[in-house]
Amino acid sequence: MSEFQDLSFQIETIAQAEPEQQSNILNQLIEEGLEAGSIALILEAFPIDERVQLWRGLPLELHIDVLTEARAEVRRSIIDELSEIELKLTLAKLDNLSLIEWADSLPEEIINEALQLIEKDELELYDQANEYQDDELGRWAERKVVTLPFNISVEKAKGLMERYSYDAPQQIYLINKRKQFRGVVSYIDLLRAEPAERLRHLAIDNVVTLNATLTLAESIEALEHSSLSTMPVTDDEQLLIGEVDWQFALSTQREIYETRLMAGTGMDEGDDLFAPVIKSSQKRGVWLGINLMTAILASVTIGLFEDVIAQVVALAVLMPIVASMGGIAGSQTLTLMIRAMALNQITSGNRWALLKNEIGIGSINGLLWALIIGGLAGLWFQSVVLGGTIALAIIVNIITAALFGVLIPIALDKLKLDPALAGSVILTTVTDVVGFFAFLGTASLVML
Image (cartoon, rainbow, N blue to C red; front, side):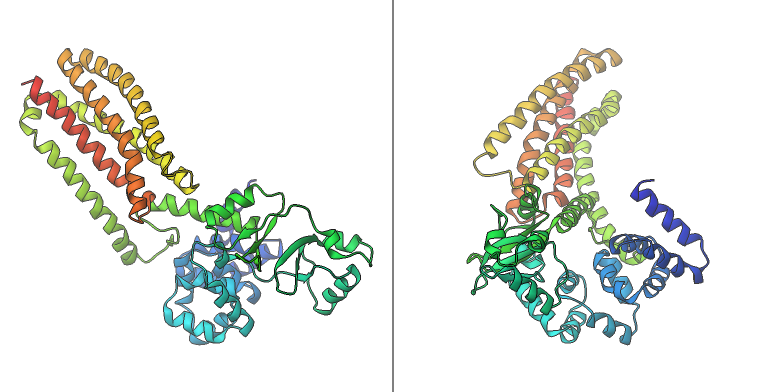
C-alpha cells in the first residue's frame, strides 16, 4: 500500500470512529511513526470543529510542528479557535523558523504577541532571518547548526560537544574566529579519527556553499546537484549563516508546484479544504467575475458576425473547434514558458530565438491540422469554401497562440505578476477572440 493510500485509510479510520476515540487513534498512529507533515494532512481532511479537537489531543511537543506543516488557512482556523491561555502557551513554544512561516498568515497582533513570548535566542535568530527577503535563502536557512573551530584537535572537539550537550549531528561546520566558513566534517569521521588529528584535515573536499541571497528556486537546483544531503549557507563575506537540507528542498518544491497549480484557477496554495462557505465564495467569485469579462469579450466578437452565423448554421457548429485548437496550442507554449521561467532559463538573450522556435512549431502544426480539419469540414458540409475558411482560421489561431504563449508570460513577469495566475486567462481570451474573428470574418467575406 502506498503512502497516500495509507493516509487515506488513516483518515477513514479516524472519521469512522466515535468522537471520543478519534484522538486516541491518531495518537496511536503517531506512536507508530506518523510524522508532523502527515498529521497536518490528516487534520486538513476534517471540518474545523473536529480538526481543532484532534489538534488539542496531540502530544504537546507536536503542536507547533503540526501547525507549521499545515497550510496557512488551516493553521489560522485552529489558532482562531484557541482560548487566550491556549494561544499564549502555543506562541511561547515557537522557534524562529516556525515564526517566520507563520508571520505572513496571521494577524499582526498575534505575531507581535509571539515576539514578546518566544525565547530570547529564538527572537535573535528571527531578527537575523528578517534581514533577507521572503524569496531569499537566508530567510529560511536552519541557523541551529553545530560549529567548531577549524584548527582544534579531535579530542578537544569531542570535549566541546559533550560540554554543550550537542545532539549527534550529521555534519559539523568548521569556522574561524570571525565565524567564517572553513569546511565541513562528517560526525562519523570525527568519531573514527585519532584524538590528535586536527579538524581541518578531516574536512570534506570541494564543499560548495550557497549564498544567502540566492532565490529559493536557485537553491533547490543547487541542492539537486550536490552530493551532500545538507549544504552550508553563507553571506557575501563567507560568514556562516546556517544550512539547508533535502527536506527543505522537497517541501519548497512542493509548495512552488502547488502554488502554480492553484494559481491557475485563482486560488492560493494555503487555501483550506473546509474553509468557511462565505469566505470561499467571495474569493472564488472574484475569479469567476474575471472569467465572465473574458467570456463577454469573446461573445461580443461572435455577436459582430450574428448575421453570418444565422445564414450559415455550419459556422456555429465549427466555431468550438477553432477555439479549442488555439487554446490547446497556447496552453502548451504557456506551460513550457512558465516551467522555464521558474527554472530561470529565460533570458533577454534567448527570448527571440525561443519566439521564433515556437512560431515555427505553431506554423507546422497549424498547417498540418488546418489541412486535416479543413478537409473534414469540407467533406462534412459539402463545401470547399467552408473547408478553406476554417483551415485559414486554424492556421491563424495556432500561430497566434504560439506567439502570445511566449509574449504573455514575459510581459506579466515584467509587470511583477505571476504568469501562472493570469497567463491562462489572458491567453484563452486572445485565442478565442482571434480564432472567432479570423473564422467568422473570413466567412463573411467569402461565403455571403
